[in-house]
Image (cartoon, rainbow, N blue to C red; front, top):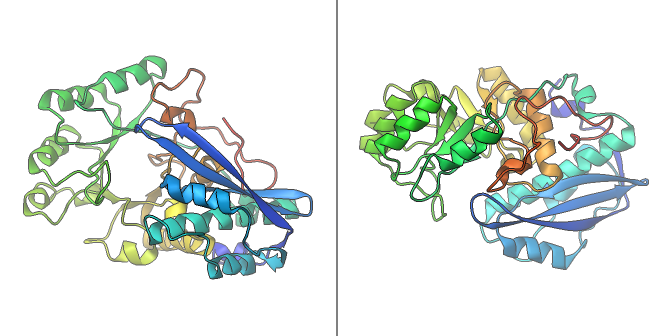
Length: 353
């Protein structure tokens, strides 16, 4: 049985929904807005979190209110199909199709949560999988000019932390040597596939050569394998190249320049429950490893992504640290990796840390 087939026929009654706006200033230097969708039915709520990045899109959603016609008795598969038929944006999204994927996942995840809560069962029970403690890394940029200070400040409070770092051309040889000496770096993100964002990083053969040499065991995420200079540096490193930004579907995995050993599966970026389940099944069939990634969630979306990772890839460097680590100065008392199993007794939820 496929993963989705274990969920598709769950009955779900929807009476309506409501919206809850969240906001926070996060470590990348911007105010993050998200929206929690509360899908109501039979006296219960199912929740999903909209992680569309543009504030204008979040504000438009909240101002429009609960205008979508979702009330009725459905199977989970039917409700997801109904969501897919609707235009979930009151105005055209700033970033086009990727934002539509994010919002579709919001309503699908709320539908899954509500269906499971109405059935009185947790996700892992339906899937026949036991959640396991979740390994995580903290994703971080090192500022401009980049220094060890963000690393050292976090290690002073949390000495066992592991990191996924955004490499930039401003990294000096001395900084790279210090990072390597810390022994805390599991992944390096080259951000080569982003365009028109504040995190764009142009292909830089000097940076790539320094990083490849200094971190022989780290995963290399989203490098440029087309530019002749960077491609030459990476020629013998394909076994540790992994992909994040281009992965929205199975077709995207199949279109990669060479078969991957590992990919980042972000549920919101895959953009739908059946698509996500099929992607997990595809990776398992083809021996492709996976890790999870976050989208600066502020509410239940982070716990849901952690829950899925604990079921499908708990032991990889999941970029799913507790949300407190998104703060510029993470507070004391946050949990260390691996996160303990904390699935709620019913639904698609993980208890807050």
